[in-house]
Image (cartoon, rainbow, N blue to C red):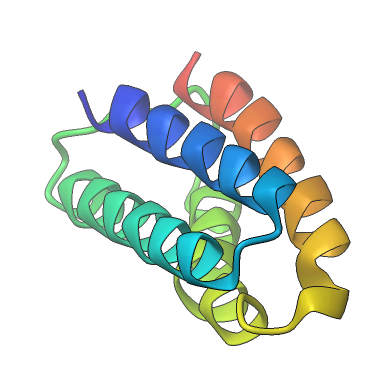
Length: 98
């Protein structure tokens, strides 16, 4: 459930980035961050299993989605980087979640 929700929210963010609509991007970034935060809290409670050892990769993914992304979402010049990093996040999600 958490993985699917993060995947859907990440894809919605990518779609919003294609529209170049600032309000849609910020709203999608917020939803993505909320989905990742919910998954992170579930992970800390032991409700989400990962295919990786340790917390380094999940923690880095959480940091991107909840700290770095919201700080960049309002800057149109950062949008290409956000799209690239979000695609990487989604690819890594497949690795981490298996």
